[in-house]
Image 1 (cartoon, rainbow, N blue to C red):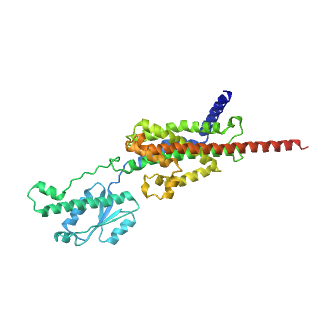
Image 2: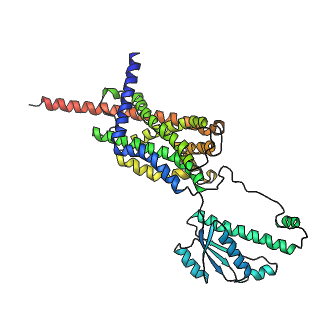
Image 3: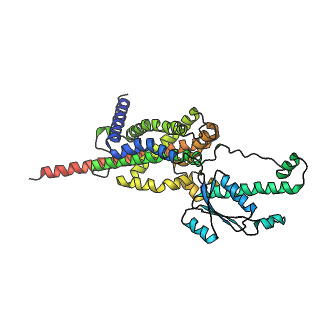
Length: 408
């Protein structure tokens, strides 16, 4: 019984020391408090418009006909495209495109109206700046929508129908309605922000724990993150105390990220809070133990920042959100299984964005628990090694002091 009480006392002591170090260390304070609070607001504010509007486009009209002018007017009237100017030829239009004055070109050939009047298929060429996919989507889809609408109108006029209903059926034999599922606005923010929020939890945790471990090494001056103290006598006490400190802080930060931020900016959030809480529990513990393992592997304080900044963008792609999971090579899918964010992002999106329940993400939920257990064991083993190193260094220092004291 006394040993249990002593272990709990040591665990609370380590928890309190870790909390004090988090508050005193400016780097840890920034990554564990400031970044989780401010960065999601900044990121969400940047993408709050959701979709791009009024993309500048240049028109090269070699037809100079009533039909070509009608096409340009309809494109300009759309919400996504704005006709910036008319160019005399393609070279002039490409010059504007290369200088990014315009994001797209509509080229109307000289035989455009002639081919239509001959009952032949006419062509409009679309050139777009592919450096930004949202602009390409706006330029291409606007041209496609306008050409389909004009084609339906021409087909209706030439059909010789007697009633309005006959014209409607001829223009659109099968009526359809496009309904974006889980993303009503079709916006980029609702699509990418959930993954970013989960990555912020993982990355800031790893950075904070890594910086804290670097500070401990610098204080001990022996590249060891275990202080020489009777309270740090046991790997379970050390891992439990440190994990409790970060869990208490990030339980609040996680609630803020997944419940407050999406509602401030109007992003889709239809998941039940109970399912979110149950799912995020292993994810948060997984990220904490993963961060503890990473902090033991890096030698210097700055290495953690370089490592996590380098892997942030690849991790976003490996989640299967910004790039289809089925198109990711098998090797890289295996690499993605090493990171908590892979399954955390997938499960969170299905619950919060798609209205799923815990049973719908049972696979991700179970994998997160297995990952958490694996990283917990690894963290204990690594900290046990650190304890042995600390004891060995303490004995060496004591023997040197005795040798110095024994000399005349």
